[in-house]
Amino acid sequence: MIVVIFDMDGTLIDSQHDITTSINHVRNINHELEPLNSDFVVEAINRDQRNLAKLFYNTENYEDRDRIIFEAHYHKQCTESARLYDGVEELIVSLHKSGIKMGVATNAPSPFANRILEHVGIAKYFERIVGADMVVLPKPDPEMLQVTLEHTLFDSTIDSAFMVGDNSKDMESAFRAGVTSVFATWGFSPQGHGDHVIGHPRELLELI
Image (tube, rainbow, N blue to C red):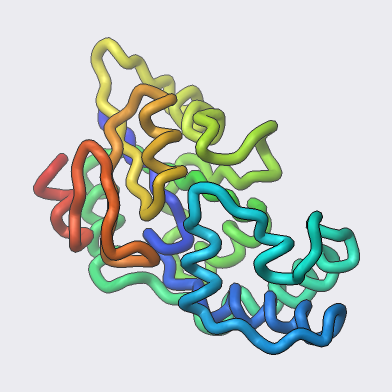
């Protein structure tokens, strides 16, 4: 058996415009701050060490009032511009037809992940869609990956598993879970390091 676990934002889905729009909504409503551009938002999210509350809202901690407004706005916004990266749908369908089991491990809350993946038409292909609200610790902790591996009855002595993502947290979670890491450069991060680095979804088919 082969199991492939994907990150969502920046790997399967280009969601940067919607994320940025909702962050800027909070900045305007709660803090009267100027809007950020999506390049800054994506770079901030993918930093190894960062305080996103400070970077986005100039607060030391993520305040409840910001979270509530962001989540309410993003619930509507998250499907406005979200799209699959070129070649992703073909990849997912090909893996499914080959009998490969798939999952999603995202640091986004699972209600948003399910809503977005349903919207773009690929949610049905995944064994599990695991968001940060479903585990004790988000990536780079390996728990998200372990949830999917356990669900598929993965046996490391005879089976193979891959984690495909676009940032160092994805790669570290793969290492800590004992699975092969695959860094995807077509999304939020044009360069990175993993057991393998691929520049187009079709390269994952060749790798597997």
